Image (cartoon, rainbow, N blue to C red; front, side, top):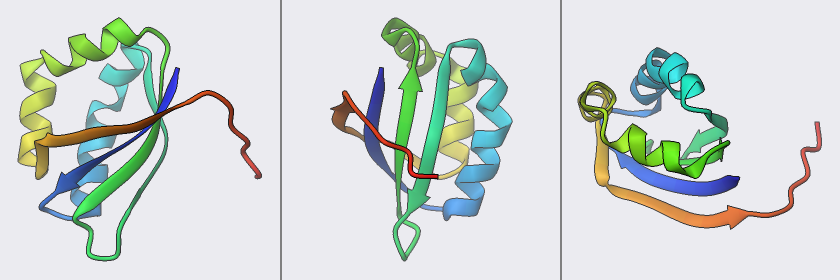
Length: 94
């Protein structure tokens, strides 16, 4: 399952990206992978396309204090997380 989501950040995209790379192995273990991420001009929001092999694992992610604390420390406003839409078909024009 793929979905498009967004959330607010307070410490810029580079700080968020460094944190993401730190937790990426944990996410991979859960079958969660960000396929693409980008930010707006003032680096206050991240937009991403994420693939989740098992949606129940996403709930596990939200209950892991180690990951939650790293996200907070990187400036992620957890309550701003919003799934914009589930992606049913896509095209990658690379």
